[in-house]
Every structure is written in C-alpha cells, then in structure tokens.
Image (cartoon, rainbow, N blue to C red; front, side):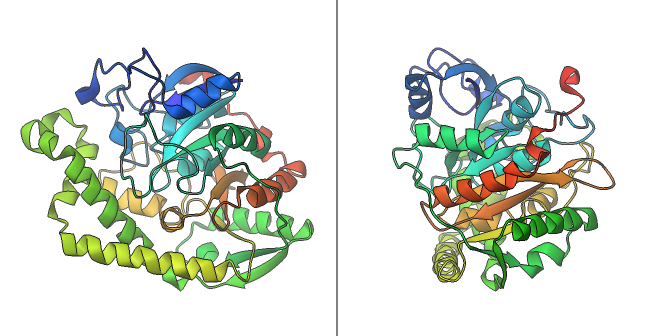
Amino acid sequence: MSIGVKDNIDVAGVETTCASEFFEHNVADADAEVVTRLRDAGGSVVAKLNMAEFAVGVTSQNSAAGPSYNPWNTARVPGGSSGGSGIAVAAGLVDASLGTDTGGSVRLPAAACGITGLRPSWGSISNDGVFPVSEQFDTVGPMARSVAEVKALFDVLSPIPSEPSAVTRIGVPSVFLTADVDPGVAQTVAAAVRTFAELGYEIVPVELGHAADAQDIVYTIVYSDLARRHRHRLVTDPSRFQPATYERIALGLSISESDRDRAFAGRDRFRQAMTATFESVDAVLTQAMPVDVPPRDGGDDVVALSRRMGQFTYPWSLHDGPTLALPVGFHPSSGMPVGAQLTAAAHREGALFGVGERYQSVTDWHRATPPHTSDL
C-alpha cells in the first residue's frame, strides 16, 4: 500500500515544513511513531503532502508551498487543513494517506474530496513526531477511499484494536439537517439517512442542544494554544506567516486564563452530555459540512469561513470518541462531493466501521473518481 503523510508528520531524513517558511530545511531525525507502525506493517511511505500552514485553516490555500486544488473542480477548495492528504487519495496518487485532525482537518478534506476519513478516539493513536496544534484535541487520522481501508490503517496505527460492535440505533439531530444548511447538502444527507434506514438501522431523533457552544469552546482552547506556541514568531517575524495563518493565530493573544478555564468547563459538560446521548443510541449521524464545497476565491474572511465549514466538525472534536467521515453523494447543483459523519462513544471505532462498510456495500460514492487529476 502506497501512503502519503501530511507535512507535519516526521519522516526520517525528509523535511517537515508544516507548509511554513519558518520550517524550511527542517529535516526530521526520526520517523514519527505512526510512520514506524506503517513501515513495520509493510506500508510504503512515498510522499509528504501539502497542508494549511501549521495545520491552521480549512481551505488549504495558506501554504508556503502554494495553494491546493480540489480534483473534482480546481476552482474549489479541497478542505483543510489536511488538504493534500485528501487530494492525493481522491486523485489516485496514493492508496491512502495520514492527516491530522484538531477541529475537522481530516473530516473536512475527506468530505470535500469524496473519500473516507477517520478522527479516532482521542489518544488512541500516538502523536509522537507530529508537530502540534493543540494537544487537547490533536489526533492523527487515516484517509482512504473505503471504510475497509481506513479500518485496516487504524488497526495498524493504534495499539487499541477495533472490535466489532453491534449498532441498531442511529441518532439524527434534526437541527443538524435543517438549520442553516445548504439545501443541496441537506437533500443529499437526507437520502443517506434513508439508505441507513433501508439497511435496517432504527433512525432516532436526538437533541444536541449542548453542541451550540462547541465552536466557541474549541476556538478558545485551540487559538490560545496556538498563540502560546507561536508567540515568539508572532512578535519577532510576523511577515513570514501566510496572512490567513497569522490572522487566525493572532486571535489567541487576547484569550485569558479565565476564558480558558470556562472553555475547559464547557468541554467537560459537552462530554458528559454525549455520554448520556450514547446511552440511547449507538451512533449519531450528521453532515460533515453545512455548505457546498466553497470556491478558492471565496472571500477574505478566513475566520468566518472556518466557522461556517467547521460548524458540524467542531462538536465532535470536543467529544473523545471516534468520528467517521464518508462520501454520501454529490451536490445536485455543483456536482461536488457531499460527506456525512458518524460518531460513536469512545473506543467504538469498530461500531462505526461496521456501519460504514454496510453503507458502502450498497453505494458506490467512495468509488467515484474525479476528473482533474492531471491539473493538480
């Protein structure tokens, strides 16, 4: 299996640039643990893949190596921050890839590029040898065309094997499917919900009112962590950042300790609420993005765009369980991929793999290939 890894993951003897001028000529001394595990299992690591600078951003346009292009339509973004990881799999350049996910950086590119990606249970895959964004939320995540391939990668990467687990009830929060969602996205995800019902899963309405503050909680913790990590660079050499990266990281400079304390308390409340949710359902299904895949020239307000694209990925970053993103069709107007997310309780990756594989056994969305592989 040929595998590409995001350029914030160390490969011995190869530069780890994090798509930043600051890390030019930053050659890794050793493999990250995930790379070691891949090699030990017979995988061939063949490429380092472009990304948003320092894994900050949802469009993968802010890179010192240049912008990334969606292979379904090169005028559209590929998602981020693991944009190159999504592109390489969708375009058939590699069999599989590794990304990292803090607030959606595996799931958004998977959705935008029409492939499958996993944000695993937090802590189930080692981050050793991976340049961090926020240790509170960071995780490496496998990306491939199919759930079966993602499962195979996860079982190599994690010392905690995925165990088969029955799923009978899938919760669907009505607000996630209707409130401020692009009609074409809502229509496509609703069709996927019907397919799950036809497969015999009981579709159960659930309320996730506790998710309303999720973005603010994640932003407070992540941006303050970023500002702390990059404070010296922000102060001494700000012009070397990509403008969109600087704009977002600098937001963290004004976040206080009391702001962080409130955010951590909010995270704990969210996790408690999710524990209660998974007492009544085995998984929760939502769309990955509430919008169609945005154009590359979609405006300058990168913070607003990040909030919009990540509206439904940030809540599951607060949750410590796994979330599987998988393709469920194409937008009826633009023809761009549409993705959904399945989320389960901590360390129930096996439950998600089982549901996802059943879905992909009766659909072909994950087998579709994009038209622009030679234009990337």
